Length: 113
Length: 116
Image (cartoon, rainbow over all chains, first blue to last red; front, side, top):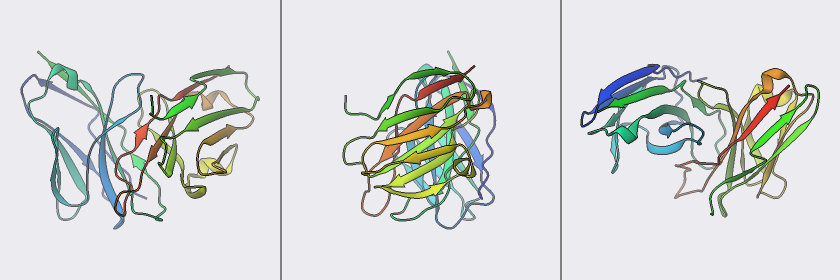
């Protein structure tokens, strides 16, 4: 069963790039890696997902090395509104595949002016 | 609003009572997930359904917790003989099938349970 580990907190300043790493040493072949953002009193919100190498969308990039035992979420030029908790989620996503979905304990990102 | 809805939003109950929560997923989303989240922790996986089939469930769901999705639309989560340790936010999410995979989970606002 994949166990995920993330730093508990990180601080940054507006305009900087932030990289948050998640360790998942026991990731299974069928597992994908997904990152979510959560604000207080709200449900998590999808940021990005990948299986291996690099994925980029309009808000973030996700780097996954060849051994897939870790992943790094990269947020370019953060703003105050990016202050939130960031979670990595490891688990299967393919049709008809079962398997547990494991969230990390979350990284609380604080962006300062 | 066509997002995931959960009812009730808040539930206060006494220890030993049974409670049931409802989740209505986004229309045409055929996967539905339940999680539990306590303060300062990440969501803890409980179970998920693909249509009406329960594909996976945690060990917790073999005890006092049970979930159903009888017609492949809404789902209910029941907790029997509640304990104070059950106090948490219960989150529901849904996702749709893309080409062959389920990418993004859309989360509801959660049901906050307080067991006295």
